[in-house]
Image (cartoon, rainbow over all chains, first blue to last red; front, side, top):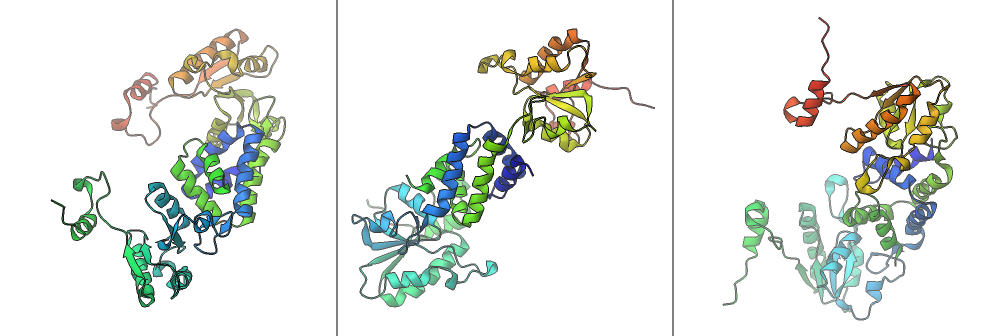
Length: 198
Length: 198
C-alpha cells in the first residue's frame, strides 16, 4: 500500500469523514511542506502521550488535577455534570459558569449496553459525600431522552447526600423561532414558564 | 497551548474542516489507543518523506517513474491530460482507460495569477515532440470555464506537433435527469449529439 492509500484509509476511519473527503484531505496534505506534516503528526501523537484524564472531574488534561479543578478562583462548591469532556468547552465558551465540572463519560443507554455502572456516577457521589464542600450539582446532560434518563438517575443517587441538585433549563434556543421549534421543545418551554416582572 | 488545542488548530487548517468539526475529530482521537494515533501520524509524515512526483507524468508516486508510467502493459501512445494528480484516481476507477497520464498541476486562471507557464505544459510538449511514440493526447481538464480555457490553450500548443488532440465528451451525466440538468450541460449535450444506429 502506498502512503497515499494509507493516509486516505486512516482519515476515512474518522467519524463523518467519508472516502471522498479523506481523498481530498490526503491530496491537500501532499501539497504541504514536510514541516507542516510533521507538526500535524506530532500534535496527534501528543494527544496520546501528553493528555490523560483529571482524577477529580474526568476532563481531558495535561495536568492532574486539570486547570479548572486546580483553579482556586473557581467555585468548588458548584459541580456541573456533563456527559462528555467536549461539553465542557461549550459551557466554558458561554463565559457564565464559575464552578467546576464532573464528566460522566456518556449517558445511560440500555440499547447500547451502557448502564449507570459504566459512567462516573460513583465518583460523583464520592465528590458530594457528607463533609464535602459541594453545595449544588447542576445536571447538564443533553436534552435527549438518554440525557434526561441519566439526569433522573443521577438525581436519585444524590438525593440521600442532601446536596441541592438542579437541571439546566430546557426551552427555546436564544434567537429561536417558535414556528420552527419542535413540539417537545415548546411543551418544555411552556412548562418552564416564569412570571415576568412587571 | 495544550495538545488538544494544537490538534484542533491543525485539523481546522484542512480544507472543509471548520472549528466544530476539528473539535469533534480531536475528541474522537483522544479516545483512540496510542497505537492508532501513531499509525495515523506515521502515515501523515510518510506523505512528506516517501511520496514525490513522477518525473514523466507528474503524478504523486513512491517510485520514479510511477507505477503507471513504468507499466509496460499500458499504452504509452495515448496521454490523458488532467489538471490534478487526484483526477487520475477518478479515471482509473472507471476501469476504461489503458493509456498514460500527464498532470498539469492546475488550470489557467488569470484571476488567481496562474498562467500557462505555471503549468506543466512545456513538459507535455516535450513528451509529444517529434519522434515520440505519442499518437493521441486526450484533454481531460475539468468542464469548468478554466478547464475549457486550459484545454483550448494546450490544444494550440500541441497543434504544430502533429499529434491527435481530443477532448473528453461533455454531456448529461449517466443517470442524470434532463429536468435537473443546467442549461449549459444541455446545450453541450445537444451539440455533441450522435446519430443513432438503426
